Length: 398
Image 1 (cartoon, rainbow, N blue to C red):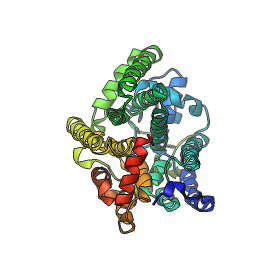
Image 2: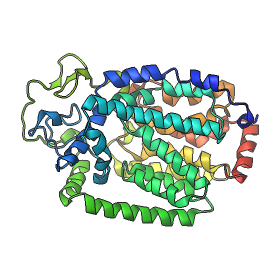
Image 3: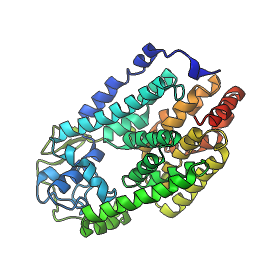
Image 4: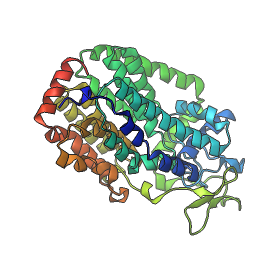
């Protein structure tokens, strides 16, 4: 089967967009409490405030439901430089801002998908897109206003530029991701087996140094010190801030999943389908999770580099959730590229199996482990014909 040579059936891809209505509804009716932390970080930067501290004592507009409440710290826990990314959106009213952010995520992944289909980079089965559109990771990302869709898109663009011999751009994008969420730096392992590995890692180090210098120049010492303090305090041991109780017009509404704030309607702070972890067994052990996650990524490197750098990259993606000890169900979006890439290559009787990490109820807390396991054995699901195609395409650097 040579799916990549099939005529593009655009009508089926248009049908595959049908989950977009559900996604937009969830975006509009949810408070997006994770994005709230990003928004307040940007708002703090605009007002020359430390983005890692909870400034609710200054104004009720700094209230961060669930992730901050009365804590000393805000919900922001990413590297200091990343807080500047959200300053443009932080200047907008909150409801408009969070919907624009989700829209940017959806448009980005839609344009990237269109590009892959149009350029025939690899074949995408339209039905696989429907599964992704209604999957728990996607719905959770929109509900919480997380960044996974955007950072996965950036990672894929990095891979594309690497294969087009635009090594500096590729390495720079990986470096940028590491200054947003740190753990995507694991993806650099995929390029160890490439013929351009020396150039890639030189550019990666240069890019990281440039970003580090920008971090020193743009981010005050206080921010950098508070960042270290913020990420080393366990989530269940957060110290209390200056206020001992919330103002009367703020807070989670009793016996509901609605939140009342000063700058938005009463909205759902979460949905039940977001309550699941990708790596619950290692949630309190960064050292062990880093070792196991890196080891799993190296296995993928040695197993798949001879077949396809694309397959190697996509499988390593799934170990980011293992390296990250506090990854939630939203992190399962890292599995989506491998799922879409493999769906057409899998034997029909096994297609439902590889969909499990996306469709199993999050509260089972096993989806992240399934994705990692599938990344190790995915070729066992492929037909012999598709394995041969991978070897041929690798010679063409696809």
